[in-house]
Image 1 (cartoon, rainbow, N blue to C red):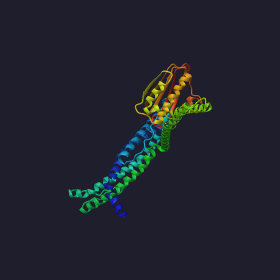
Image 2 (cartoon, helix red, strand yellow):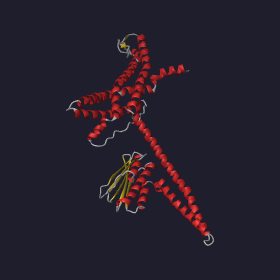
Image 3 (cartoon, rainbow, N blue to C red):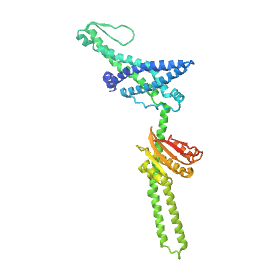
Length: 429
């Protein structure tokens, strides 16, 4: 019956693992909350903001703020670990702090770090909440002490008091066995209430952790869009690869068979009897051969077969077919996703074609490596230089292709050479 289940839930609540974990969370999270409030809110933010209002204290004030924001991020990570380990609250990690440029740019980026400021807000609210949590843990302690009143009475202790966690009022003395029974009963009642107090504090803290220590709504939306884009890019790569196989195993085979059949027909025709039919068969055979060649070129553009063995084999094969000597260096321990491999191969092929057509180089090099979660492609040549990204040009098209997966392409090509083109792509689309 629902009433019996509810009564059993209330009576067994102090004995559950969840209740003890929530009480431990309230107890352990108080110290970082207190230290964080003192160092971040009082010292770093408040004192730093006050310093920035003065001329001489502007620089120290900014340094205080920067240090406080960095500390807030660290404290936020600690609170997420506590929540994950004790109460099972798993919150996604917010984006890591990244800054580029000089000292001023890095300081500005730190001051604009929304994740750090949300962590400061959490620290600001956490201290009064942690104080309530510590008060809830006090109920556990007082209840446990009162429950032992009978044991202490039996052990000969006659100078006891009935403790209660409510503010105000005194602690009634216990001088009799009946008073010991009453103290134990009050202790049991307090222990029955205590888990629900800690659970209420933890419930509020869960909401704060999700709202202030997670990635934030904008970051979550961005992550969803990135995941959706990655699925779309990978699906497109799989569809192209399936199309290439269908063309290779289906249409190309039939066209090859058709061309062979037309060759056999041509050999059996007599030019003296049916010259016009001979020319017609010859034209049809040539058209079939040209169509087969175009179809093969199209299927290679969809998914180069050389990529089945990885980028190292594909680039080596590409370099071997190039008219110029090409030095290939590949250091890719783990293969990227098929879509990224296809994009990197396409960029290398287009850049080599540009070298042959426009640079007048005597040789070139291809370097492929990974690091920091990115795939880096570098193509260099010793040509005349002067290459640049022009609207509507081939390099501009490569830039747009790289941007579809949050990659980038840069060109360094002074007049007189040499030319270096760097392509940076993520390992996963």
